[in-house]
Amino acid sequence: MLNRRNFLTAAVGVAATAGLAACAKEDGSPTGSSSGGSKTITLGFSQVGSESGWRTANTDSVKSAAKEAGYKLQFSDAQQKQENQISAIRSFIAQKVDVIAFSPVVVTGWDAVLKEAQTAKIPVVLTDRSVESDESLFVALVGSDFTDEGRRAAKILEKVLEKAGHKGKVKIAQLEGTTGAAPAIERAKGFKEVMDAEHKDDWEIVASQTGDFTRAGGKQVMAAFLQSNPDIDVLFAHNDDMGLGAIQAIEAAGKKPGKDILIVTVDGVKDGFIAMSEGKINAIVECNPLLGPQLMEVVKTVHEGGTVERWIKTKESDFMQDQAKDALPTRKY
Ligand code: AHR
Image (cartoon, rainbow, N blue to C red; front, side, top):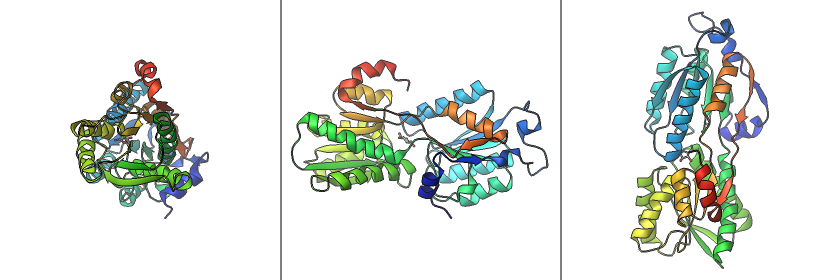
């Protein structure tokens, strides 16, 4: 079995044949537009949940893009539970949808259900997050490079430290995303990569724990961090929501977020930008949730038996605090 890293490394820029979509289904009927292009595409979509502002924007993007494309969308919210996603995918297979798309809550444990989709000749497109599975079990991934986001977070932290005039050792607390989820694993990995290569002697992660990508989780874990490590210099939060929760804990501890503790987060949702324009977040690494239109394009192509890139990446930027006020009115999510 190829692991996820192999898939992503090998897959960049490689066109994969999405021939699954052109095949006949279990009942012998041809799939959608391979029978002439006039049939409405039915897309089964299993969403992770509604844990963050990013997720809400992503759900809205998928729903509106499906509507715009004229697809019939079967939407299912897994409430951050893998078993719910597996049930949703099984139900999409039973309904004989044309294409299945899902954003996997964690990276492992998908082979059995993906094999069932393959047996039913229903193409599967991953969106936002990827899996550690046999690469033949899905057609493509539409989403961000989370490892690079972690690297970008470390690089922007260098600028934040310089701007703050911080000298000497840097004690870092890390709020991780959901345990076992691709963005949590890869953002931590990318950040550590830069840290090990360039800051082995001056940066140290003194505390690191999951806040499950939620505001409540971020607040609770940050409060515990501050108890055990009152002299934290920097918070790296794997998403804005955990950062926003942490800000509440920092203020409750009588400290100034953005000054006493420098904060770098990932996502770039409006609430994150508001906190940044108030001086409470120092920098944000953007992770674009507006994947709906690209996903619908991929769905159409695979449904018609065309070829798609294995990994369709999203364009993203990084923002320092002094850009926040100008950027805020232009934020789309
Ligand atoms: O998978 C993307 C991540 O999931 C976002 O960064 C986070 O906010 C969300 O919950």
